[in-house]
Image (cartoon, rainbow, N blue to C red):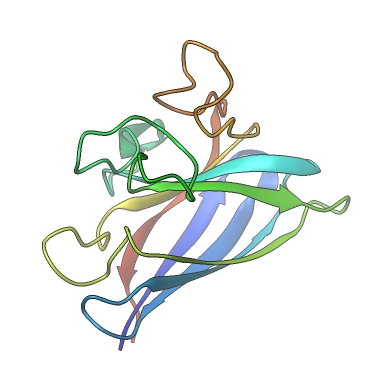
Length: 153
């Protein structure tokens, strides 16, 4: 089993931890996120291409998209590999989120190790909103927290 973690920090007190577990090289990756400080409601939740936070979350680049597809839902066949949909913050601003995904491996040539997790200010429209940004970013707004994905001991 391979394990990874990203410690997220951001603006206005948004913070959290995201854990990744992959049991086998060709198996799915389990994602467990715990976040605080978000406004209540849905927030886009993505893997971004770069593990660079030298300019805060803005330097993490676009969504991780090794196959050159358009933005979509994590349930869509056509989507960026890093499209993990939305997390929903409760009234107290907390999120506890678990998902399993087959397009974000911790092993192999398309590993997400060294890339970044980004939480967005707004809801991801999953590529279906009709906005000019729907098919590239899900029109999910600014980046409120991010962290680099690293191996966990």
